[in-house]
Length: 214
Image (spheres, rainbow, N blue to C red):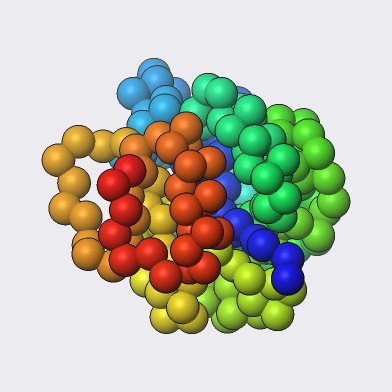
């Protein structure tokens, strides 16, 4: 049976915050505050990002998600391209499950971005599963299980990890902020460099991991 590692994209594989900067500059928006989010798992509000009201922030986010800028976002954690290559070399099929929007061009741009950074790890556009913005990933993860054994799902948002848990996929919380309260039913990593060893353990223990020292 195919072994699959599912993963979020923004603030896990690529830097959504850094990717926003050229878009915001085109709009004449202030970007002087954006450097503080580089490489951080901190999740700012739309008001913090765009320095505007929430409704305007939502419209800007949707416009960005539909723009060509999403194919040019930089890597989130340096060296993670080699990490995913290592996992790929273990025979693990990596699939991105991302709330960027459901339009095909968004899927294509997202895949081009991942392929440009991670190469053969994302060799085919169908390795990107597009989820509408602010929508549950649960049905998409459940459907992914039809393709093979999903050994885990990596995300920076606990609500999406709960959705993975609901369909019996091991939740892996990637968050590099200090002093976190980690739920008992998730595995926490603060760097993707810890992922290859974890993946090996998950494969060997056939997804019955309760708690791992990572």
